[in-house]
Image (cartoon, rainbow, N blue to C red; front, top):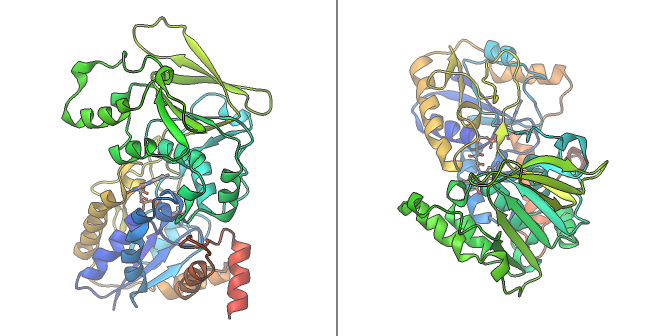
Length: 429
Ligand SMILES: Cc1cc2nc3c(=O)[nH]c(=O)nc-3n(C[C@H](O)[C@H](O)[C@H](O)COP(=O)(O)OP(=O)(O)OC[C@H]3O[C@@H](n4cnc5c(N)ncnc54)[C@H](O)[C@@H]3O)c2cc1C
């Protein structure tokens, strides 16, 4: 009898696991269980819409999904129904690949004041995640502040300042495209608590900031003076050289409409405003300054992009950041974990390959025969709980329609709500 395997989540780590299981010479039936209607996790909802080439890996994952031994159960959230315990009872192997989708907190008053968003919210909004469609971030303001010095901070800044021409060929959602092009934002600050040499930007992403059509990238005054030249080694120097090609604000020949300013050695200590954000108070962290030096930046929107935490999963032990506790990706007999859920929120799509290969190998080594019902019992559970799941065949229809209905240079026009999806499926039957 074929081995019954359930994979919870459908991001890169899930698909690398599926790929490796399919490559192996084993008889298996794989069910991918995903909490929203569409597969591919952060490739669809994290990777920036103007970075289409990064999303090409979906084509490889699509081949795995189309394999006759693989089935898809979209709009089924594990924790609600089914639970992990139910799944381990009905499958020989269960793999948790749920990623990390909670924004790390700034630990100040950001949740009390409107106009402050976590990167998860903002990124999911422009990428059309069905849970964030109604976010309506405040773009009716001249200044935005982004906290964080990683690529996600740069993605958010870039999307805020790109023009119509630069958003062509992207799969940005229609509503976000419209809002961003009508936005009043002229100035975006990217704030780092340490210096440019500690920033986690990759060179490609920084270089792109210097090539924007309507926007100059600049450094805050004094940035270059504050860099310790002795700290530079070859790798860091590469990033440093691109960053320091940007002028300091005082030397900017202001030839473009918008500015992104990189401001280092500052941490937010308070969001200002009564109901809606009016500014942010920053503390200067540079070591030779006195302890009480603060700056205030007036702004109408703040996005915090300082990393992610995992959501709690009942019955599963985690550390304080929501990372699942495991030994070599094994949680217990027949229960495994991969990707960000197991490793924390670091690395690119390809970093998850290794986890997928390892867990597939564990499953092949650990499970030699099956005595569990798998898919038939899952369907029973889902139907008994009146969950209208999205099947693989339905996802294929949705995917085709997104491509067919797109206009102009946009490669697809995403469905952004369950209502829209179920309405389309009803009419296409
Ligand atoms: C904003 C952003 C931009 C990025 N840009 C790039 C980039 O340009 N290039 C690059 O190489 N990497 C990029 N990355 C990193 C890359 O996306 C990650 O390395 C990768 O997606 C992690 O894969 P994963 O499978 O662990 O998690 P995810 O991709 O997050 O997938 C997890 C999946 O599990 C589902 N899920 C969660 N909980 C449940 C549940 N209870 N039941 C069922 N399903 C559930 C989620 O809906 C999701 O589909 C980016 C990351 C972010 C956050």
